[in-house]
Each structure stands twice: as C-alpha cells, then as structure tokens.
Image (cartoon, rainbow, N blue to C red; front, side, top):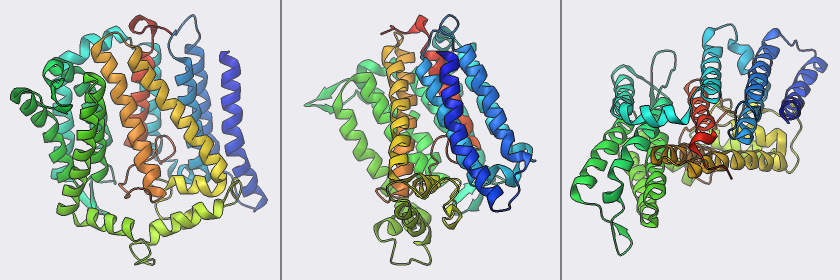
Length: 419
C-alpha cells in the first residue's frame, strides 16, 4: 500500500505542477531550477513519510500521513504556479520554514511517541504559556506597522506559533480543572469562581496580547479553539453556545479598538462602496472566483496576479479561478477528511491530555480553513488567516506541519484504541 499511495500522491502533485511548466514553455518563458527544487524536496520528504509509515514500522494513522503529504504537495504546486518560489528561492528564508516543518513532521511520525507527550506536556505547560506570551510581547515591542498589523523586520509574523504553544498548554492544563469546568446550571456553564478566574487569566492574557498586536484572526482562532476544547473536555454543549457568542463579542471588541479591523468589517458589509480603493481586493477575489465557473480556466491559464496578496491570504481565489467549483469542492473534501482524521485520533486517545490535544489541533486546523475560505468568498469578514499548506510558507507552514507531526505521533497504537 505504501508505494501505491506514494505513487498516487506524486502523480496528483505532478498533474498540478507540470502543466504550469508546459504553459510557460509554450509562452516562450523560461523554467528555472527554482521550479523543480521544491518539487524535489517534497518528493524526498513524501518518500520518507511513506517509507516510515509502513504498517510494521509505524502503526499509526497512515491515512492522515497520506492526506498531509498530498495537501502539502498541492500547496507546493499552487505556489509554483504563482511564482512564489522563483521570486526568492535563492534566499534561505524561502526554504527554512518548509525544511524545519518537514523535519518536525517526520520527527513526530518516526520518533515522537504518545507516551513522551503524556509525560512531558504537563511538565512544560506553563513554559508553553510563557512562550506564547513572550512571542506576542516581542511582536508588540519590536513590531512595525504593515497593512494594519504588526510585523517583525523582514515582514515576519511569529503569531502562528502562539496557536501551537497554547493548544499544547490547554491540553495539559484544562484536564486539571475538568471537574469545575463541567458544572452547569440549566445547561449554562457555571464553574466555581476559582476555576472561572483561572480560565480567565490563563486564556485572557494571550487574548489581550493578540488584541494588542491587532491580530483579529488570532483572536477568533483562540476563542473558538478554547470553546471546542472545553466542549470536548466537559461534553457540555453549553460551552459551545456560550463560546460562539464570546468569540463574536471578542471580534466586535477588536473592531472597536482597531481602525484596520473596523475597515475590514465595513468592506465585508459593502465591498462595492469603494471598489477601486478598500474594496478592490475582495472585489478582484470575487471576480476571479466567478471567472473560474464550474470547471475553471485550466492550470496556468488564469490571471491570479490580478488579486492582491494572492499568494497568501487570497490563495483560494487563485485556486477557484483555475480549478473551478469542482476543483474547490474536491480540495475542501480533502481538508474535511484531513481534519476529521485529526479529530478521530484525539477521540481515540486513552490519556485525557492526549485526547484534548487531538481535539485542539483539529479545532485549530478546522477554524483556520473556515475563516480563510469564508473571508475569501465573503461569507465572513477577512481576518488575514492563511489557508493551511496552500498559502505562502513562513511560520504558517511551519506551525501546520508541527501540528501534523503531533497528530502523527498521537495516532500510534500505544496511546489509542484502534478501531
């Protein structure tokens, strides 16, 4: 099965990448080594991932490993289409996140065990919490304003790592408060004052940090992830209802204190009020999706560069233009299976910390996909959240691969009840 799945993934990625090269050659454009370098890197990493996931060696969720490698390969192909790699492939920064992320994923798949996570996460939980606060603090103190947000020199935004740190922290800390957080009155969560204050401080401090660095997307992800993790921990639906309202309230609060966020809400409500100004980006995105129609314009045949920031926040618009509605449906189907496999891994874990870690990772990935696709299609306000794997690399790609490495480790049989 391993070689067959590897071959199918390689053929799928090749089918997405090589028509782009053929189109360039027909248009008398050159295809440099930068075009094939990331494909070669993905091929080596995928070969290792499939080799190490052999049933007699791995024993974990091979379907999740396959979906991860497939989505990563499609992301490499999409960025090759947009020319992202060729613009900066000689710089170490272009490959550093991909290399580090792949190393983390392969380490989790091959060497990290559920027992190690169960032992070390409770010991490191407050260190992870401090790391999240420290990351936000560094960005607040040394960040520079760019497109309404704060970035470190070189347009580096490390807030993606905050999600990783806090999910691991919450997975280790929330079970210690499970009894109190499970208390409800008429279905409404009503934990003891001590537990409520502890939760408010533990999660409120990072939320205030996210507000301080003007990251609406991070605020929403942290709120919704906490809600889903509390629901998974307590099995009380009241947390879900209460949490969605809290997330909406947090988004509204950020809108009041941030002019940039307020402008995003205004554009969402009426993007055509200023079509050549603030509404230009979402307007071009909607036009690209409309131009794609049912079957798309074809690989390499669209004009994705007409959409601002298309390689990052609006990459879904480029996919919709060239892949069409059918291609987008298939892509979202792959995402759905990918997130569900992560959620299934968490649900099958015996240890409460590992069970909550799987639920938290699935929540982060699912919410991130929802916010990005919803923003690009104008179903939700644009939050600046990237689409996992398909958006341009950096800390986003690194964080997603590290989260996937944790899921690959969690799915190993010595911490799961195999179904």
